[in-house]
Amino acid sequence: MSTSARQKQIEREHWTGPVRHYDILKEGTIALAVVVVLTFVLAGIFSSPDDPALTLKGWAKTAPDNLYAVTVSELAGTSDSASYGPPYNNGGDGVALGPLTPQKWMGVHQPVDPANDFVVTPLESQQQPSDVASALSQWKSASADQQSKWATAYDTALNDPNGANGDASKVPTGDYGPVPTMANGLVAMASSGALDGILAAPGQFYNTNTTKQILFLGDGSYLDDAATAAHLQGNEWGMMNETGSFPGQEWLQPFSFWYQLPIFNSDATTGIAATLTANADIYIFAIIAIMMLVLILLPFIPGLRSIPRWIPLHRLVWRDYYARKGTAR
Amino acid sequence: MLLWQDEAISSGSYVPWGWLSISVPNLIVIIVMIVLFVLAITLPFPKERRNPRRHS
Image (cartoon, rainbow over the protein chains, first blue to last red):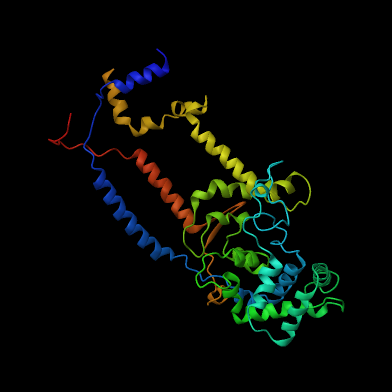
């Protein structure tokens, strides 16, 4: 008899094995009560993950030089956001799995223009001191080419490791146009707290879209340092962790594991490790997809589907039944 | 709004073990899950009581 025919025969047979009374509502109620009690007890022991939100004001107070440098890089188009690519802009191709570039396929459907969205528009939204207002006016009346020349020249001079090295007071004299004054203006706005409300939702009363805030924060060191302090970096199992002393997301271990491997966590600038690290997200996504497919198709994969026969854990669970079955023989 | 530096953010306690780093609360939860799994397999089922409404 074929396996399929035997399966159908078993399904038609009347169950003659042991049965027991079972109340699913009672079990559900008990489980709910236990989980509620456990939630309160564990929250009491471990506290709750309610750290205050990071703000642009906090960035300006903690690392004003970094905010200043990032503002210049947004104007120059050299920030991470400016070179991210789809879905925000055309600054890059996004992640690639070999020849496959799904980010590029989806195109720019949530446009972010770092220079205007993070710097120019916020400065325009409020009454500015006369020097910042003049600088803004000069910037807006200049051609795109001229804007790029000013910003690139200042960005290069500010970040020159053999020169200013991030210190604005040491930047040599040059034709930087209104860029330094605009950057100072934005840092002043952020310090006052005004930038937090404006960058999130210009002209809107309610807002749940913090994309621009997070992108801008991500371009600097403030968000990165906070993630390191809270053990939330991807290369230190951060995906599994939670802020404070609260248990995190252990079920993300299969994802987090791959990010710890040197090939997905490399400082190399060329070679396979560099490619895999730069495109780690999509490669790990593909690995997990294959693992999930193996799990879904387990009953059809010879060898793997026989594991319960080799490791008969079910015989331990139902040992009474198998003991009786053995005795009956 | 409060700043995380002012709050002296608590990063919790971590167990570094070579390339593996795990927070103590995560470790406790994982150990409890393993213990529950082992108990679920090894503890005997409760003995069935006589129930007049049972169908067999």
